Length: 373
Image (cartoon, rainbow, N blue to C red; front, side):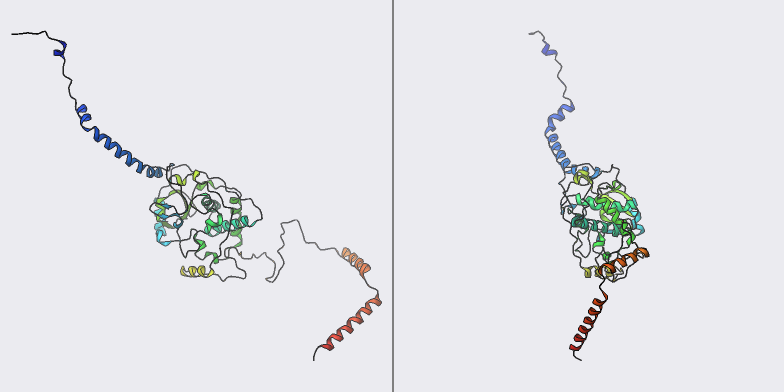
């Protein structure tokens, strides 16, 4: 029997085929396919995840006509549209309380300032902002009134809204219902403002237009009273509640301070209002309508105060006692001296006065004789 020498080859132990090695060999194509599917799914889920966490995302920049998922176009989001209200009253308060507040830190928007010049642009902006503060929050605490003014100015700076104060306040005012600020279409403008609350609202508006920022509401662009629960409250970020108003911001990048970079147009116009339409809407809602007074300007004609000491037909101006001018009454001695000076300087001789008087009587008789009897 032939023999041969044994070599190292004969003593080599075969490498075992492990389950992991067999799996990699058989399913590498499946791994690639799964990875591609996961990457595709993540690309779709990332914007929603970012919006839910409030972080900036690569979502398209908002602009006029943009929509909010589950709600609709931004310019139609309103509590004046009753179809958007889920519930009212005590149930609404309970429902609002169940919605959690955002846990994210508040962003602070840039100050909005218009030079306080006596020009039409500033005066119209002041009127519109004063109206918003008065009709929306006259009975709210000072912080609440400032917060409403801040929402108006935040919208002015946001790409999704008009680029003027009056444009924001009166957005949708031409609608019978569904205006952005309810008072512009529900007939509230037919109520004559009270002097005290109007002046307080105007003071808030002046401060806001001068650059005051109400930081308690951050980048809020929405609010509603706690006695109504709109469906869009679930789709926005709940910031805070001040008084009866609850304030919200957009989720995701739309609600970040960096988005509030809109350029102010510098054009402020108060639109002409349809008084008949306002009166009709007020009557539909069961609201008492005041009869317009002479030269009534909706939302701007302020009721007179008891301290206004003048008659209705007085065409003169009111005396502002806060100025340096003061009414004075001359003393009797000074008045007598002045009278004597006038007589001495301008008085005519007695003979001349008699001649002038005779001429005047004669002229009067001639005119009387020419009138047909």
